[in-house]
Amino acid sequence: NSRLWNEREGFYFDRYWDGRFSTRKAASSFFPLLARIPDEKRALRMLKRLLNEREFWGESVLPTIARDDTAFKDQGAWRGAIQPVANYLVYQGLKAYGFDAVASELAEKSAALFLRSWDNFQLSPESFDARSADAGGDRFAVRGPLFALPALEDLLDFAPWEGFRFGVLSPSRKARLARLSIQGRRYDVAVSKGETTLVEEGRTVLEADGGAVFRRFLYTEGEVSFEVKSLKKREVTIALLKKGKYQLSIDGVEKDIFKGKSAEFEVPEGDHAVLLLLLESAEDAAAD
Image 1 (cartoon, rainbow, N blue to C red):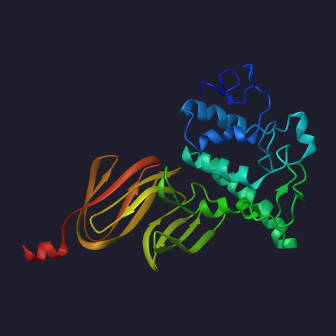
Image 2 (image 1 turned 60 degrees about the horizontal axis):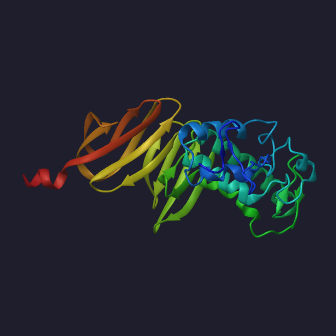
Image 3 (image 1 turned 90 degrees about the vertical axis):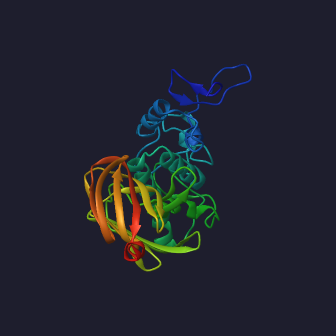
């Protein structure tokens, strides 16, 4: 932040040894998001640059050098061509700041590039032209599938900054990911405009009546906790591991008491923290 942040430009730049900032706006300038280096104010300024179609955004993203740079016309390696590593790391950086809608759009655009070449020609390209979306570089690059990986991780992922995360904020279509292994358990996720469903080892764990992103999801016999973001209020149903009496708290405020093996409740739009805490199991109640 002290060396590479240019406050006037609202962006990170390389610097020359004499202290001058470089004027090259590159995709790598977004990489500090991945390490959570900028504060929220700086991150929002960077997001504005990312979404500027004169610089980085557009139908085919993400060019490795800004569209208004003189090197962009070259469309070579790191001179404008879209690279899988850059797309993947910028996607993860957006997720680290909770920029879910933009991250999902980047994931969808990036996967569409890859699948166009794969479905039609069975190619795994090294890069794509940011103007024409034509494949470039090696035809079978081992890192090529990184173009498509964000579309899978947008449905379900496990990351240091957001723990167990699943769901899409505003799904544009139906999507399903099946049999993904995380920490020795298999999960399925289904999303659409009308549902978000998480299945663990063949058992439905959570259902919501529309798009939402669930973060830091913890599911044990004693408690279920998570953070949830949605654009509208959502009805959420949780299948509990142990039958009993549970207290529901949202944002630290007690909301309801549930008895049995499931809980159904409403979460307002926006960002919220949810906790379902086991107060007394059915076995303990019977013993008393």
